[in-house]
Image 1 (cartoon, rainbow, N blue to C red):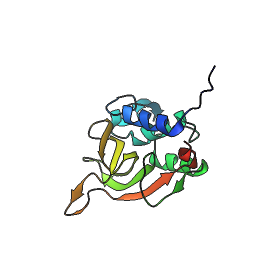
Image 2: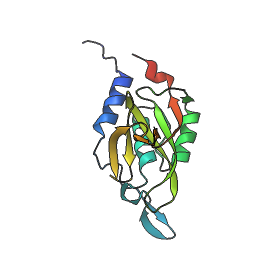
Image 3: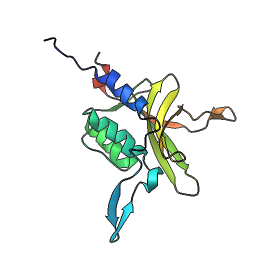
Image 4: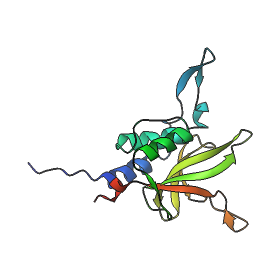
Length: 157
């Protein structure tokens, strides 16, 4: 029988790309103030759940998270480091922006190609493919990238 050698980065990127349009990351329930609530607001606050779920599936962080802050802490604890330029498989942290009438939030997603990213967008309530800067406004990125993270395990063939 031939030895099987898993290809982490190829499988990881394929899972991310195949997540576009899926509703799996839309809801997570918890009891808050004695009441059952969907703390992800039917997909409006699901970027951290999407990113952390993919990372857990590949052993790249310890557990799934519902917030950007907790996900960032887990990235740091598990060997992710900041890099200067986006490359496929990297994690993007975008600046805080308002979502509709709500509060301003940081946003997480994945680099999947040259200037292309996938993240769980609040407007669509599911992962979508988009430009890494969400396009441009007045010649500047529509949404600034604050940080880019990379894990050495993604360097494996």
